[in-house]
Length: 447
Image (cartoon, rainbow, N blue to C red; front, side, top):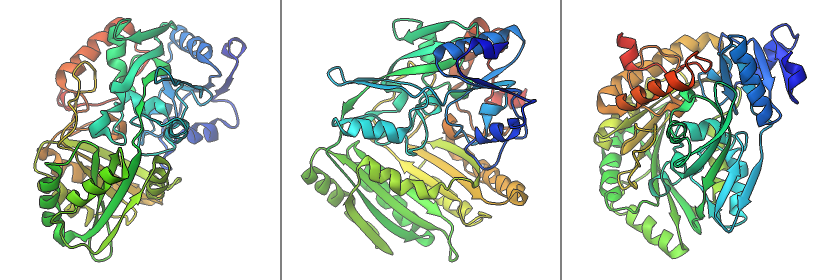
C-alpha cells in the first residue's frame, strides 16, 4: 500500500471527505467535473517519488498540484494528484544572491523574505500564487520588461521523473529537462520539488500612477501610451485595466516604475505624463513597494468566484488590441469581469534556449468573473468569443492563464518547433504517459 511507504497522507475515492478534499485543491470557485481517484499529500520529495512510482506501476496518470491556481483546474484531472502544499522550504544565500525555493512558497512570502535583504526576483502579480505553476509556465511577473520572465532566472530544478528518479537539471546537467522546465507549463514531464533561483538587487523606489478614462478615449490613451513607452526605460510596467461600468467600460492606465532612487522615479513619471489625455481621475505617483502592489491587486480576484480566463501575445498596434478588448468588455455578462492589456516595447531580449517561446510587445489577459453556476455558459461563451475576435491580431497565448479547457484553441502556447521538441522529449522520458498532455493546440485541433 502506498500509504505505508510515504510520510504524508493518501485520500482515496472511497474516503468520505474525498469530494470536498478534491474541490479544495482548486482555487477557482468553478470546479472541474473530473476528480482524481487518489490525492497524495506529499510531505517531502521522497514522497513524490514514491507516489510517481506507485502510479507508474499501477497504470495511473499523475498531476502535481502546487496552489491549484490554474483556472481550468488541471491539477485534479489525472488519476492521481500529488499535492505539494507541504513542500514550502525557502533558503536564501545572500552572498551568492541565490535562493532554493520549494513549490508551495508563495509570491507574497518570497517577496517579504527578499525585501528584508534588499533583493528582488520577477515575482508574479498575485501574492497567493506559489512558485510551482508560475515558474513552469514562464512567469510573467513584476518588472518583467527589465528583469525578464521569471523562468530565465531559474538556474536549476530538482525533478521527479516518470520512472520515480529524482534528478537535478540545469544548463550543464540534464539540459533537455531544464529546457522543458522553463516554459512547458502543465505539459512538463515531471514534478519539480525545488527551484534554484538567481536573485538581483531590488528597486529602491517603486511607485505607481493611475489615470482613469472612459472607453470613448481609448484611441487617445493608446496613442499616448505608444508615444511615451517608445522612449521609456525597461523599468516601467504599463498596464491598462479595463472594467465594465454602467455607462460603458472604464480604462485605468497604470504606470509602475521600479527605479533606483526617488529622483529617478519622479523624472520617469514626469516623462510618462507628458501629453497624457485629460483623465477623469489621477492617483499618484505614490510609493508602491511589492507588498502594496499585492494589496492593490488582490481585490480584483475575489476568492470563491467562478472564473474563466484566457490570454494573448501580440505584435500589433496597441490601439488595435486595446480598442478591441474595450469593445468586448462592453458586452461582458458580469460586472466583475476585467481585462489587463500590457504594453512592453522596450523589454530586454528574451532568451531562446527554453520551451517558453510565445511572447510579444503586448500581453493581454481576459478574466470572466461571476458568482452563480447558472451563468457559466454565458460567461465562458463571452470569453471565447472575445478571444476569437482579437486572435487575428495575436501571435500566441501565455500558458499560465490560458483557457486549457478549450479543445479548439485559437492561439498556441508554444511555438511549433518547441511543441515538436517537447513531444520528442516526452517519448523518451515518459513513453507510457504517466504525466498527461494537457495543453490543446491549434495543430492538434485541426487533426
